[in-house]
Amino acid sequence: MEALLYFFSGFRWQDVLDILLNSYILFRLYILFRGTNIIRVLLVLCVLWAVSQAAVPLGLVITNWARQGVITVAALIIIIVFRNEISTVLRTKDLKSFLWGIPRFQSHTPLNIIVDSVYALAEKKIGALIVLPLKQDLESVIQGGIPIKGKLSQEMLVSIFWPDNPLHDGAAVIQEDRIINAGVILPLSKRGDLPSFFGTRHRAASGLTELTDALVIVISEESGKVSLFKENLTYNIKYRSVLETLLKEHAGDDSAKKRFKHQTIELAAAALISLFCVTGIWFNFSKGMETLATHEVPVEFMNPDQRMEIISSSASSVKLLISGAKPLINSIKPEQINIKLNLSQAAIGVNKLSIIKENILLPPGIRLKKIEPSELEITLDTLIEKQLPIQPNWTGKLPKGLILKEAKALPETIQVTGGGMALKDISTIFTEQILLDKLTESGTVTIGLILTPPSLRLKNNTKVNIKYLISKKSIL
Image (cartoon, rainbow, N blue to C red; front, side, top):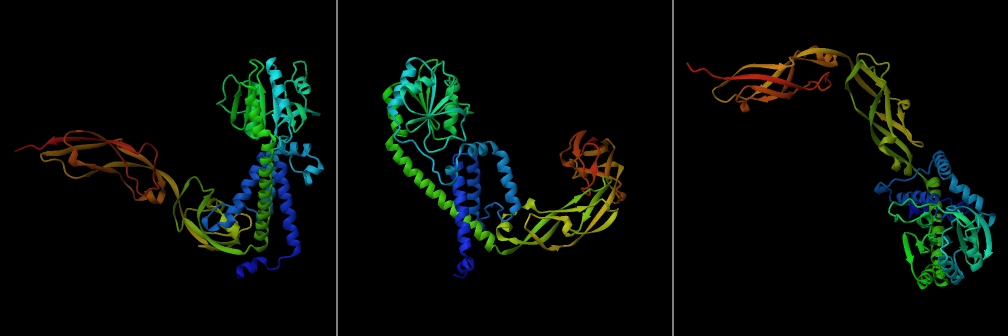
């Protein structure tokens, strides 16, 4: 109860106005860009933010809404990536559409005129593309075209696709009882599973229905066959009655009532989601409390002298105590925090390096409280090269009656690179263990070398050949 009172303490009428105004703006953006890639991206971001706010203990990733700079960068990226879709929507919408207009849907469409026109064109093998938008707006998807806005009739529809008409290669868009546009260019499908006999018209119809819920009727110029495209379905129609049935099912007055009901539910849900998202953002901004968290971060050493090597370090990671708004703290990923120490001024031997704020990279909005440890001891050594003999590391005993008369490494010596202090007291490089128990006759074995300490490196391969000679003991 106290937490609830805290959330609503100081709630002003200005806050109510602020939430409602921004909720309506978000809702209008959904109306304007519904069905486009922009709204899909924004919806994904909003859903991720809402879910993560409700389930922070689950570790769900959230969008960084707490920093205006990040939001601005995200907005710029969206504008750059989707500039064509945004330009199309802004160019085709009027003031009413921006402020309060709701998209229309097919109703009272004279489907019999469309069917008569389709089969009049099919009989003469005249190619055609006829588009019937349903719920989604097509203006951001289609291109070109000439506004007609004439009353739908068989004569007008047939004349648009007559071969001598300059608009016959494009598509005609029908809304209710009007031909809205003609000569429209539709996006081509990118699917690779379409039949090989599909021409440009069929691929354009498939491309539009992949992006929207529109109905597209295609008449083949070569065969005069009629096809209907809806989403990912293609209907090859042989009989007039089948086309009438499908059009009534998807674009008839009965289906229009269902679409109106679905649209009402969809828009109501969009309005509620917009209100929920904006309210959540308001609470996040206004009520976000500072939260402390501890992160153990590995240290990254920068600009070391190539002639030197790090022999040891007092610690490989550092604990950082950080603070910030709870949503930001919970959204931090390990790679967002970095500690970098510059070794360009380090010398041979033990170096004490202090870790200060300038060495630490934190996400925007996160503050540093404590560093532990605040100082590291780094031991550096100069890299040298040393030629060392190779010594086979025999273990076990030869079978009874056999003796090892001679063994020789090929090569006999090997060049080792490492720190001068590490190589100072090393006079021999040993091989891995060679089991004598399994040796019964002379031969050669290929074996690896053991490098101690592990910081040593070999100039050549780490494998050598050990040639050995085994003979029988003489009996006196």
